[in-house]
Image (cartoon, rainbow, N blue to C red; front, side, top):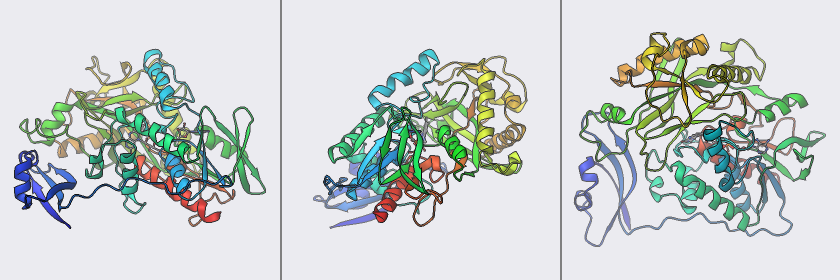
Length: 505
Ligand SMILES: Cc1cc2nc3c(=O)[nH]c(=O)nc-3n(C[C@H](O)[C@H](O)[C@H](O)COP(=O)(O)OP(=O)(O)OC[C@H]3O[C@@H](n4cnc5c(N)ncnc54)[C@H](O)[C@@H]3O)c2cc1C
């Protein structure tokens, strides 16, 4: 028998196991397990809000797949091995369906060499980069595992699956769990081995260029070599950077919709400064993790918000083809870099662009990325400006150090960014400084451009069957189709799509 207790601990109490046992009133033969914790630093008295389980220790229920496939199991083609595709594949196995995963990029083991080349030679392989390859954009991400919506599905199933494949069991208890880039590739490879062990297949370096569509029904795909791969159903989980997929839909006259997204910059501060602001001085830095923040404001008629904040992180060049400049953030499990970075993004909707073309927001995103590439001297150096100079609308004469995995180059971002974005960001930063005194500082720098926050296009699907309205058997899935944002929600959407496929079998 176990009982759950809600209790607050100071950071000192939290790190004192004997005191912790006394506070929850545990008997000598009882175990004490913290099953959920949230760090609350809104007031000077910083506390961990905890849910503690006292009594007989429970063992975590590891993810299990019961169905060993029969030789006649229906083949479900899954395009894209990101979180949506991988979780769809695992779920297919639970339904007795054989997942065939096709991925334009390479396995995690090979992909890392192409990623290293981006920094070393400033060359982006359009099939193998920070976004494309096994594990998708999630592999070299921060691995922050939370979704804002609890309605999307069983989050704990996703977390259990990560733990069963090598993630730290602590991710089950942190309200803002985090895996870290250094751990993710091993976890992704382990998920692949599970899928293969139970009868699934992986085909890397296989880029889908067309769908086998006949009389409103999809029967498979065609790859870049013209090979036809047939299947009973196709789950399309290609992520928000697969622009060639949106262009394919446009060419073939299949429905697409414009979807509001967000665009801005990545702001970088010394981590020590963020710790001091968030922890009300220097005292707690020793006991607490590198501090995070989450900020929102309304400015010039737009929402401005912090996005994918990475404490102790680095900034990465996340373009997926030549001629683009894109930044994103990530961190290792120990979050031990001296920098704190975060996307600061402004909402963009079709009304801002004045066009109802489904691809208008994608074109806008492409133009800003091309302008940033050009501003850097036609390469993937990051156009950079000190925050104080951005607010004063002047080019920075000097730049500070940066955790960008490449070179930074001084650039007038107040002119480079579309005027409504620049104005909203300026107002947003001033509002953030009122909430977090010291946010505006000479040490803070802005790097451009944070443009891959979510998909600017939606591939529509029927609410009940999750199939495209014109293409039976095609299940648009995950972030690229516009139904998720982030690792957990994409994984949950993969599970939903596999469930929808199984209902049609
Ligand atoms: C640097 C970085 C840091 C991030 N940090 C976080 C974080 O901390 N927390 C978080 O929740 N989210 C984070 N994200 C976002 C997160 O990674 C995505 O939301 C998530 O990966 C989306 O999952 P998905 O499966 O829908 O698409 P993706 O992960 O984009 O996967 C799509 C896959 O499809 C493949 N593909 C594309 N086109 C084709 C084709 N034509 N044929 C075959 N295969 C194709 C791609 O190669 C890719 O592997 C980060 C992203 C980046 C880039």
